[in-house]
Image 1 (cartoon, chains in turn purple, orange):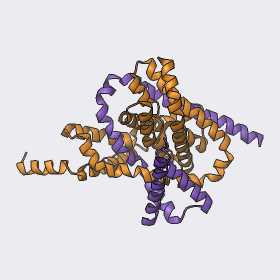
Image 2 (cartoon, one colour; image 1 turned 120 degrees about the vertical axis):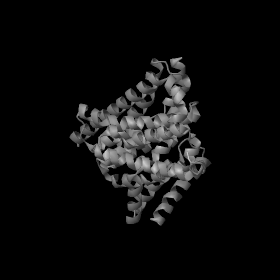
Image 3 (cartoon, chains in turn brown, blue; image 1 turned 90 degrees about the vertical axis):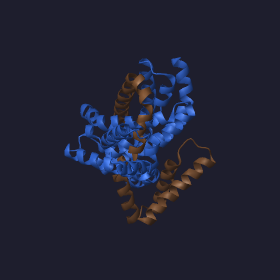
Image 4 (cartoon, chains in turn blue, yellow; image 1 turned 45 degrees about the vertical axis):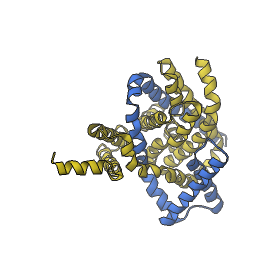
Length: 116
Length: 243
C-alpha cells in the first residue's frame, strides 16, 4: 500500500516536473498517467499491490470532486444572473457530445468489425 | 447557546478538521442514499454531497476558504488518482490497440462538439464573454480545464464549477442517451461518457463495469490532452466569429 502510493506520487511528481520544464498546457497528473501507462506497457503490467491500491483509490473517485464542487458557492451571483445560458449550454452540449462520440465510435467500430 | 459551546464552535469551525470530516460524512451519506435509490443517476453522490455541504456552509456563514482548508486533503488525492487511472487503462491495452483508429476519430469529433456546442448555445442565450470562455473547457477534467480557462481568458474557479456540473449532467443523462440510441457496447458507452464528462463520468462508468470505466478513463485523458492543445488555438477565432 505504502510503496504503491509512493510510486503514484513519484509518477505525479515526474509529470509535474515535465509540465513545468517544457511549459506544457497539460497538467502534471495527466502526464504522470501517460508515463505510468508507458511503464506498465514496458514492464508487462502492475504488481498486485499497485493494482489493489489503484482500485481502492478509484472506487472513491467521486469523493475527490466534492471539495471543488462546493466552490459553486463562490459563483452564486453570476450563476443567478446567467443561469439560463449556463444550464442550457451544459445540458445540451453534454448530451450532444455523448451522442456524437458514441455514434461516431460505433459507426467506425462496427464498420471495422465487418471488414475484418 | 451555552458560552462554552460557542467557544468550542469558534475554535472547531476554523480548524481544518471540520471541513475534512464533514466532506467524508456528507459523501458517505450521499453514497448510502444513492444505494437506497438503487444507484439511480439522479441521486448522484457528488450532487447530493455538494448540495448538503453548500447548504451547511451557507447556514453557518462559513466561508468557502475555511472549508477548503480542511477539504484540500481530499482534493489533493485527485492527482495520484489521475495517475492511478493508468492501471485500468493498461488492462484494456489489447482492445485499445485494435480500436485505435476509431477511438481517435471519435475523440476528435467529441472534443470539438463539446467546446463548440457549449459556446454556441451559451452565446445564443446571451451569456457574457467571460462565462463563454469559462464554459469552453467544461468537458475536460478539473485541473486541465482550469489551466485552459486561465490561458484563454475565462475564470478558472467558475470553470471548476461548470466542469463538476457537466460531469453530473453526463453521469445522470448518459444512460438515457444510450437507451435512445440503442448503444450497448460498454467500450463505446465508457468512451463517450469519458469524452463528455471526464472524471465524474468515469466514476459513473466504473459503477457500470470495469471495461466501461477503463475506456472512460482513456477518453478523459486523451480529451484532456487534445483540448489543452486545441482550445487555445480555436477560441480566439470562434469568439471573433461570434462577435
